[in-house]
Length: 520
Image (cartoon, rainbow, N blue to C red; front, side):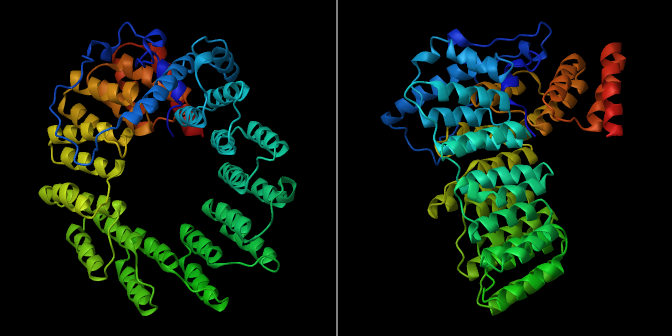
C-alpha cells in the first residue's frame, strides 16, 4: 500500500511540495530534521543517457499541461475532503483558466490513485466544467480507485450514473468484479455478472472468462469451477478458460488439478499453449523443483510448443533468487539455441543475475551495448536493476549516475524503488545530510512519488539510528493516518527510542497501537 498523495503535502510537515510559485505548499516543521539539508541540485556530473533522444519543440505543450497539473495538485493537497477539493478547484481563479482535457484529468486521477477523496473531488470538478465531458475510460479509472479503497457504496453509485449514461463496458464490469472479490465479497462479483443484461452486455465466453479469472485470482477456484460447470452448457469455453483454471489451481497449490486441466483442454479440442505450460513451470519454480521444470520444457518441445521469452525469464529469475547464478545465466544460452529473442523483461532478469553473480562489467555491456543493438528499450525496472546492482557493490556514484539518467530519460521515469537502494546505502553509511535530502527532493518534489511501506520503514529506522526520534514519530503517525500498517519491529524500535527521550504520551500511543496489532 502507498500513501494517498494528498497527504504528501502534510506528512506532518515532513516534506515540502511545490507547484507554481504562487501555489507552493510549504509546511515546515520547526524542528524538521531534513529542513537543515541543502536543497540544491546534486553537483554530480551525469553521463549522457544512452537511450535519451533530443526533446523536440512540440513537447512544449506537454510541459505546459504539466504546469497546469501542478497548479491543481497544489490546491487539492490543501483540502481534506472530496467536497472541499471540489469547492477549492471551482472557486480558484487560476483553475478556471485551465483547459480541461482527458489527458489532464487522467494525470490527476493517476496522481491521486491512492486517495479516493481527492480523486473524486477532482473528477466532479472536471465533470462540472463547461464544454467538457469525461471519457468512459476516466469513469472506469475512478471506479477502480473507489473500489481499491473499498468505497463500495460510492463505486456502485458511480456505476449507476454510468449505466444511465450508457457508459458501462465490460471493462467497467471487470473492475467492479475484481474489487468486490478483492474485498472478500466474491458473491457480489457473481451478482454483477448475473446483471450484465441490465448494463446492455452479454453473457458470453469473454464475460464468463472475466468472472472466472476474477474468482481464481482471489483463490475461489472451487467456486469458479462450480459456476463454470453451470455455464458451459450454454457458453462455449475456449483455451483461455482452461488457462485461467490452470493458473487458479497453481495459485492454491493444487498442481495436479492443473495437469488434469491440460488433459481436459485436449479432450475439448483446445490445444495447450505456451501459457498453459509456462504457468505450471512457474509453480515448480516457486517450489524450487527444477527437475519438474526441465521435464516440462522437454514436454513442450515434444508437443511442438516451444517455450517463449516469458518462460525463460521466469526460470532465470527463480534460479537467481536461489543464488544459482551460473545455472541462471545458462538459461540465456538455452534461449539463444532455440532462437528466442530477448525482450526488456528478460534483459532486466539477465542484468539482475549478472549483478548478483558479481559480473558488473557484463551487466553494463548488456545495458549499454546489447540492448541498443537488439533495439530493446529499457524501462524503469531496467534502470532500477542497474541502480540496485551498483548499490549492492557499494558503487553509489555509479548508481546515482544511472538514477539521474533515468530522471532525464524520455522512455520511462523513476518510481519509489529507483530511490530505495540509494537511500538504504546512505542511511547505512551514515551519509545523511545532502545525499538523503536530494533523493527525497527528487522523489517528492520533482516526480511526485508516494512513499510506500518499505520507504517509510527505511526512513523511520534511519531516523531512530541517528537519534531523530521526533521526526521518526511524525512519520509513524502519518503511516497510521494513511492506513499504512507499520511492521511490528518498526513499532518496537521506535518505542524504545521514544522512551529514552522521555516522550511519554508518544510512547503510550505507540503501545496502544501495538496492542491493537496483536489483537487483530
